[in-house]
Each structure stands twice: as C-alpha cells, then as structure tokens.
Length: 147
Length: 297
Image (cartoon, rainbow over all chains, first blue to last red; front, side, top):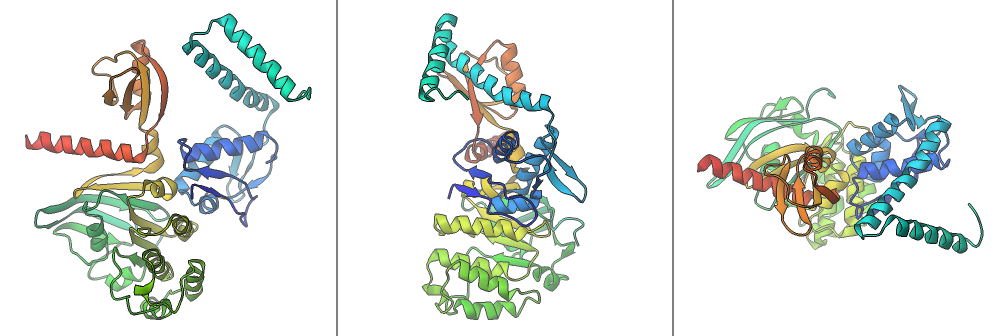
C-alpha cells in the first residue's frame, strides 16, 4: 500500500508519477523531481497539458496542497506554465536552462562522491584514480557502447 | 456557500469529570482534508461529537456552514456525512436496508454512488452489519456517509480495523470525495502514513489540549534532524534536542537558522534528514507539557 500511480484522467495527459511512502523525501519533492525528469527527458514535450492540481491530487490520493506546491515550484523554475482558463502545461525550455539542468544533478552527484571520499580519508590523487577506474568499468560494462 | 469556513470553533471547551477538552480555536476552509491526530483518550471523539451536536460545549461556539446548533441543525446535518467511532443501531440491518434507512434523511442521497461504494468495497449487500468483519463494517459506515450527498465528512477513525489494501482504497475514496474543492473531510487517525498521504492540514490533540493546526507540508519542512561533528554553542538557535555522541544528533525546528549558526561556529553537518510526523508530534507534546509545568510551577 506504499505506492500509487496515476491511472489517467480526463483533462490532461496521463502522467506516470508514483509516490512512495518509504521515500523520506516530502511528497511534493517526489512529484517535482519525477515531472522534472520527464520534462527534461522529453517524455513530456513543451505544450503538453498537465492535469489540474485537484485532478492530480485525486489521482495520486494525496493532499492538494502537496500537488499545488509541486506545480508552484516547477513553475518558479520555468518548467511549466499556468494560464487562466487554459490550465497547466509544459513550458518551452531554453537550451541554456536545459543544459544547466542536465549538468546540475551530475555535478551534485560528483560533489557528494568527493565529500564521501574525503570523509573516508582519500587523497586527491586517490580520488582521481577511483574516478578513472569507475569510468573505465562503466565503459567495459556498456560493452563499448558510448552514450 | 463557498465563501467562509465550513467549520469554525471559537474558544470551545468541554469537561467531563477530570477530563478537559480545549480551548479549541479552529477554522476549516472548504476543499481540504484535515487529519485530527493524537493518542487515544485525547478528546478526538468528543470533538467529533461536538461537531455533530451530540455533546454541547461548556464554553465557546461551534459553527458549521455559517450556522449554529440548535437553530440550523437540520440544514447543517444534511450537509454532513458522519462516521462515528462505533456505529450504533446498525447490527440487525444489512447494507441494502441501511441504505434505504439513511437515504430517507438526506435529500441529496446518491444511490448510484452508494451502490458503487458497496460493490467496490465487496460488501455483501444481504449480510447483517454485525456479521461483517470490523473492516467491512467501517467501509460500510463510510459508504453510508459518503453517499449522503454531504459537503463535509466527519470520520472518526474510519480505517480502524481495515486491512492495508482496503485502507489504501479508502484513502483514495476520501481523496475523491473532496472533488474539485467543493467538499471537505475531517478525519481522526493515529496512522501517520494516512496523514502523510492525504491530509492537507493536521490538528493535534493530546490529553484534551489542542496543540495546534498546521499545514502538513510546512510542518514537515519545518523540522529536521542533523548529525554533526563537534559540540554546538548553547544556545544555538532552533535546537530542540541533542543526543551527544560520535556523531552528535540534533533535532531542529528552524533548520535554516540552525544550519547558519552551525556554519558560523565552524561545525560540520555530516548528514541531515527529515523528521517523521510521529517524532514531530512527540516534540510538540513535550513542548506543551513543559509549558504547562512551567505555568503550574
């Protein structure tokens, strides 16, 4: 009973957001990060109509304040737009913003890895070695398929 | 009727012997799900009974949909679907008979919705209420309340005894009832997962004391736990609990202030995370108890 997904709705695209009760992240952040990923990944292209705040809350069986907050944050970041009478849709995202958002999570993950490494007492040289090894590993795992 | 509060309680108090409830001041706007949370014996059921005029306040006022008991009783109650803690008088009736009986009192009764809920809950329509499982009895009580055509559901531990799968369906039914924001739900529970899932607001009630009415997401964001290296100054803003160790764990009710103060003191935060509702309630309880002891002592 820990997960729910949207099962479609009449007035907007069916967006496959899932909420996990095991995830300690607040539910509005879970909604935000999933929608952000789908928008940046192109699964929800600009102009896609999204369900209303109420409809999304109903679909996910979650609080309307939660869905409203998620939409407000995404709107503040420029991912979606709400127009009076037109509902909410995915916004046009500039190349600049797109590349920044592609970079941010990667940079964040590297920073976290560096912090973990320093905590464990590795030197800069050792960290570089670990990074190079991990990169080589992932290359051989992908069997030369460079993506 | 969309203007103003659905429920407005002002300085409401009630006592039974040693037990004192209140004062409760509460305004509930239409379109939201409100969870009433607290240990057993905290006065949750008394609060619901007062909202239904089954108990009268000793002091203060209770107003629903802008009206008051007893003058507007019929008008108010036709807009409320109530699931009491224990359903009385249902035992010898089956779902069909109960539907007929209850529908008589509600002009906006929705028979289609009732049948849908009965079917979807897999309640046998010919089985007497007392022969249904506890969980099925709760779901039937919910179906009766939700089909009244009410604008407000008052649910006193509606999921008590309901198994996890059915509980999930009930939570969906509750969310659906709110619709496009015209309807309101107030439900009592001690299952924090239900609160986290569907509640917009949380009202905490402990030992008859009303510990406040919070927007759930803001409340969850307002508390954090941090693991740090070193010893913070006393006082450091926001810290409400400190478990000294290696590392030391803190609980803060002002995460940003605490983080800034720790940074100033040169203390590193190793990790941090959200606090769950049980822990937050525990701190609110401790705080109110402390305040009471200070005022007595």
